[in-house]
Length: 358
Ligand SMILES: O=C(O)C(=O)C[C@]1(C(=O)O)C=C[C@@H](O)C=C1
Image 1 (cartoon, protein in one colour):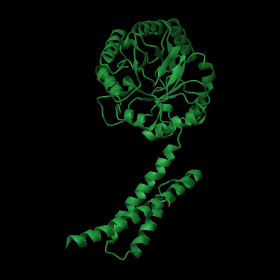
Image 2 (spheres, rainbow, N blue to C red):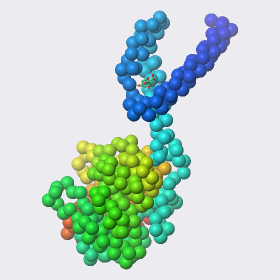
Image 3 (cartoon, protein in one colour):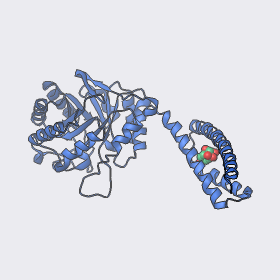
Image 4 (tube, rainbow, N blue to C red):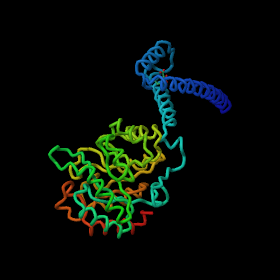
């Protein structure tokens, strides 16, 4: 074939490519419109029956030279890309989505403590509030170490109903008193919308625990508050489900939401859960909300907390949560995984020395 002939044929192909692109783009715009209608009607975007009908029809009218199989796979690619386009449109409309809100959300807590800004946050404290002495001992140590936010569970949703269930409102009061004495902010889990009003006197940040990430009535209730909420990822929740749970809170008007990865259930037995480090950059990419990592619950073992905290910060986490108890061996919950005060000090020093803690 002479070069002239080849050039002519290629010029013809360039022209057809342009026409195809125009047609594919026109199709994509109709797909977007269908996506909006489906969103309004609440029907699923993926419609395999519709796809099958279209493919059967295309094969029927196909005159070659492409085989039926090739036509099917070419159009399946177009349908898949169309579906992506519809999902992207949907993601753009979420309040939690970065697409909608390019800047990082920075939550300003009392005392000018910030979450999601330029400085990293360390949240530490006992798994459960057990007594005044235990809580005050930890609070004093945290203040000395320069920690600003103290955690402490008062309502404990435990696997067994016979395990320690927490001190309830009394526990919150103890936490508040110890924190105030040592100039700390408090964070504690609320499990029942009926407790919220009273709990607001005691907590600066309301925590929604992993087991309640799908408790939509609770999410709606904290969505009505003017108080920061720390939302934990459910034990088996996908990142999409996690962000939709956050959307429940934001859609009710509360924009002060922080996300926390706490490990997911896998087949691995050498850790309590599997720390999903990839969740951190994905959540930061998909959402503008601050992202923290709970190194204690995700690993369940003290010996790997330092590298895991460093990994979390290197991956872009805005903060770390870790459990500290004056005498972990006697703790009423999570005895094996809490750090004692000396261990916590070493942990925090090493994390700071890494240069990753801003
Ligand atoms: O017809 C629809 O319902 C569409 O959403 C459009 C479309 C397509 O690209 O043709 C896209 C995704 C669905 O799985 C089926 C079809």
